[in-house]
Image (cartoon, rainbow, N blue to C red):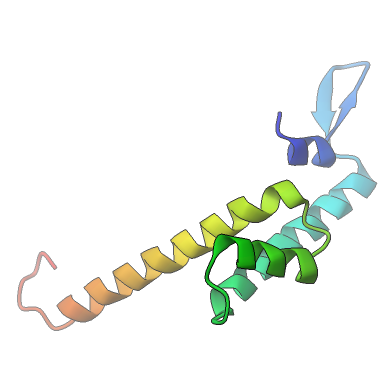
Length: 102
């Protein structure tokens, strides 16, 4: 189990089943909201381009996000942005194509 999963669940010792506790669920929701907001901010940040700079941005702007999650968030956000840019280019190049397979 990953560390952030440990933060989000607790084990019921009598049944051995993991379930979120009410107070932990709220913190997981808050962390999830922070990750979404951080990802959106990274995609709008046009002054920093290196992983180190973007991780430092997360550290300063979203201190509630654990250090070990910052780099994966940066990689995911930048990969998503690159993929969206490629798909946009493909769409623009084929928008008025007579070829029905495009």
